[in-house]
Image (cartoon, rainbow, N blue to C red):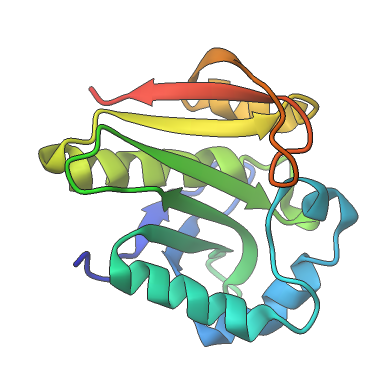
Length: 184
């Protein structure tokens, strides 16, 4: 079992630092507000209105089972309370398996400040540090072909474009880009 983990990403010149921690019940109100964004709902699998508590409990169970490690991404400015600005996940982790997947999303009002890139970098580093001895060699990142912002985040974080994957409805209604990052 992997103990609950909190990760940090330092502030930049233009954005406060980030705190990444496992999802918990206190995130439900902010999550509900964030998931109303139609652009976000197009690309991310998030809970429907009123399903936030169940979704967070599922994320807590996933973590305890060691199969999926979801992090709430919070901005932590020095002079204010932390606020939810995104989510990032490490999933399909299997003991002795050579690969796992990562995914991320950013709240509408936090886009353009490097939240996704900084959160993905933090989880990527944590994943390799934590699971390399168990056989993890590469992380895979999949996004729909029309999600140019995710493609830029993947490239910025060292995930090389590998190939186009055909659509697989309903989970992936459009073709997707597969990006891969190998452990160093």
